Each structure stands twice: as C-alpha cells, then as structure tokens.
Image (cartoon, rainbow, N blue to C red; front, top):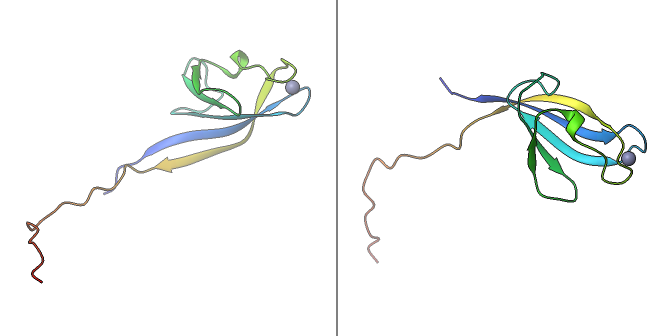
Length: 91
Ligand SMILES: [Zn+2]
C-alpha cells in the first residue's frame, strides 16, 4: 500500500489582462474557503495566501482566477533500504 497526498493545483491568470500570474497549490480544493494556498508567482518569492482574492495581478493589479484546476497525487520520495552492508570492491 502506497501512501500519497492529494494536492490541488491550478494556474493563476488575471481577469483583466490575461497575464499569467503563476501557480497555486493546496491540500484542499483551491476554492475551498479558509484553507491556506501556496502561491508561486512568476516573478517573486512563493508565499501563502488564504484565498485567491488576496492575489492581484503583478502587471495591472487586477483580480485573478484559477485556471486549469488539477488534482494530483504526490508520493513521498522513495527511499531505498540498504539490506546488505556495502563491501569494498576488490580490484
Ligand atoms: Zn492583469
């Protein structure tokens, strides 16, 4: 049984000028109220917002909307377990 996390993902575009403002992802649906959303702007550092309403277009300060919403499974990085001690190679 493999454990995974569901992550909701969307692109963010400006309503007014269509500018591609970056991407958002969240553990709950992007439009769900009150859940933190990780916002990854195109041109600045990622930050956490509570709703898409906090995000304004970097070009015209217009409101943004989530585009191409997607639900992805994120699997933790698989770690190999070393079962046998490594032996030095004999030349
Ligand atoms: Zn804009």
